[in-house]
Length: 177
Image (cartoon, rainbow, N blue to C red; front, side, top):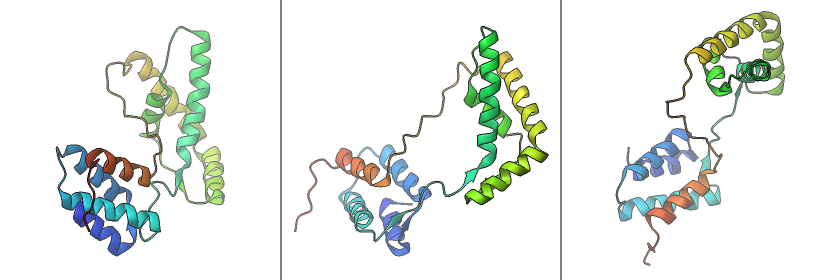
């Protein structure tokens, strides 16, 4: 999908979804040069975002309670191991391994999250511990030292990203009236 079509869709719907935002970023990253039409579309999107005509849909309107439970368990276990040995473990690798083997526990409200936490404590506590232990064992025997990690998300807002795109790709572009 082109930048112009994405912007037209966002203006029509009144929303810029994370998928639309990612596609615009992908197009801009892969293009050696953007056309005037693409610059103008990005400018229209920026204006619509600033005026509220288009609202950027937040990336995450829900949480997976299992993530916090696994991270808590992994951090505690890694701290124990690192305090008593020379081993160095990657909490992110351990959590990802365990999470891929556990059921998700999504919630959209605090009440829902509390319910999921209670449910996990009564039904899944042993399974969580077992999966974290297995992940630690694998990490000790097969560390991910030579793999390229996923870049950290700094939480930049959509407006700042679009503004940066415009500054980088169109530093001297001015719309003529």
